[in-house]
Image 1 (cartoon, helix red, strand yellow):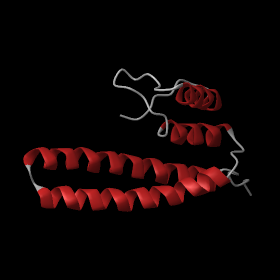
Image 2 (cartoon, rainbow, N blue to C red; image 1 turned 180 degrees about the horizontal axis):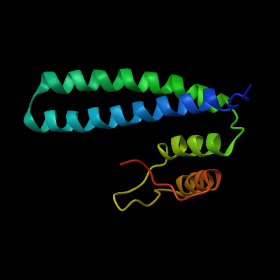
Image 3 (cartoon, helix red, strand yellow; image 1 turned 60 degrees about the vertical axis):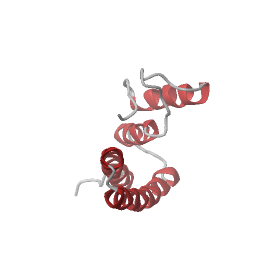
Image 4 (cartoon, rainbow, N blue to C red; image 1 turned 180 degrees about the vertical axis):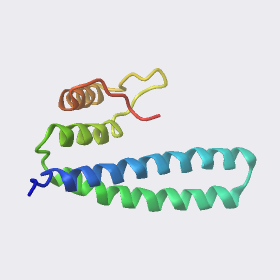
Length: 118
C-alpha cells in the first residue's frame, strides 16, 4: 500500500485558494469594465460576487495557515499562496520592505523565482 501524501490536504487547500484568487481577479476586472460602462447593476453583482469569493478564500487560507508543509511540493504551493499577499507596483516591484521580505522568503520556500499574480 502506497503512503498517502502528507500534504494532500494542504495542496488541496492551496489549489482551492488559487482557483478562488483567479475567480476574484476576473470578477474585479469585470467590475471595473462594468463601472466604466456605467452598468451599476452589474457592478453591484460583481462586487457581491467578490465578497463571496473572498469569504471562501479566507476559509481556504485558514487551513493553509494552520497546516505546516511537510514536503517540497507543500512548501512550494504555500509559497505561491503567500505571493498573492505581496503588494507590488505596476513595475512588479515590492511596495515595502515587508513585502520584499515575504517575497524573498516565499521564493526560498518554493526553491524558485515567484511573481505576484496580475
